[in-house]
Image 1 (cartoon, rainbow, N blue to C red):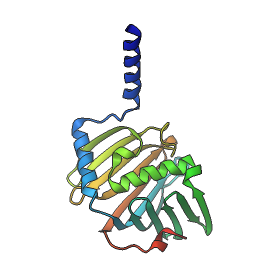
Image 2 (image 1 turned 60 degrees about the vertical axis):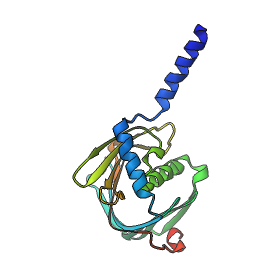
Image 3 (image 1 turned 90 degrees about the vertical axis):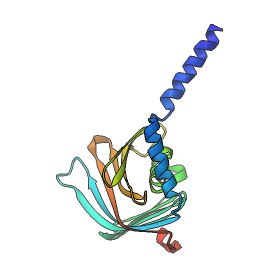
Image 4 (image 1 turned 135 degrees about the vertical axis):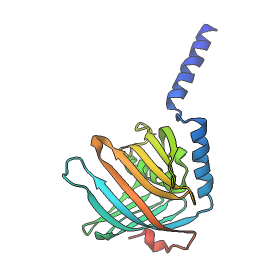
Length: 206
């Protein structure tokens, strides 16, 4: 009997380590965000992209147009630098940079698959699905702010932390910041969002 009790306690401890750490109040906030996004099937928006690499002396800035269609279609087409793009269509990733096109299968690339999981969860407002070990929330006058510590064993994207701003008026994503090792980070700020409008399939292809 003692061995059985010890085994139960041991397994409970493992489950506690692997489970997401989130308070009941924050659970209500993330559920509110998730429910608020259920009514959106597509979204288009302008985006501003900030890339911070610790070994560079200054940040890099770019911008363009974002297209999203549930559940797994996302494209960022850059107007500055013009012609560059990144698209996710199911398990296929396509990137165009400096005139070079690269296509990757998410099934065979854990880093890309982990990134897709995070991006899909953020766009859908379903932050519990991004592979976080800890989630906390706070509010500003305009946004619900969600901070998620990524379980790097479960999610191989290379991202260690995600900070999200969701608009209080419509619950849509307004800002995504991903933190990586060595203090590197990426920020996407979304503006002029439009919802549930048809998006041509070729926006997700190249």
